[in-house]
Image (cartoon, rainbow, N blue to C red):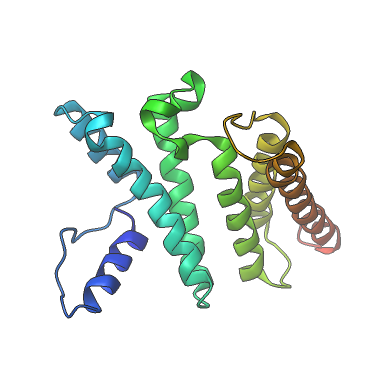
Length: 199
């Protein structure tokens, strides 16, 4: 599992006076992906637990990242958001969920319309950590790529039509707000690059 989920388990158990839980080791997104593939090869099906496990890994990591961000642990929350993004990207590339639109079988956490909010949170957290410091070329590229991914999703991804919201609500939540958020940070980074002599 991710470091975020491992820590959340330890925190939960500590409140009940326990020190040991069912999971005792965190892994990289690549290591966890290898574990998922191993379990599928051993016969675990998506309906038999894999869908819930993948959802736990992604949503649980994101949720804990959001939780600790609100308590001032911003750098650690960014690590959680990055872990979750890398894991779901690896999983999507491996199982071709987006390409085959197999969300009903493999889970809604693969939907780009779901991930766009998480990407926006990651970008905002990265900018918060950097504060007023000028970006390095590596940081600028990272922020550019995140903002561009948000923009691409907002412009091109079809929102699920089985929601209960009115069309203007969907437009604001899934398109206008993410676009405004990404473009604001993109413009800010570009402006900083213009005044940074090293870039």
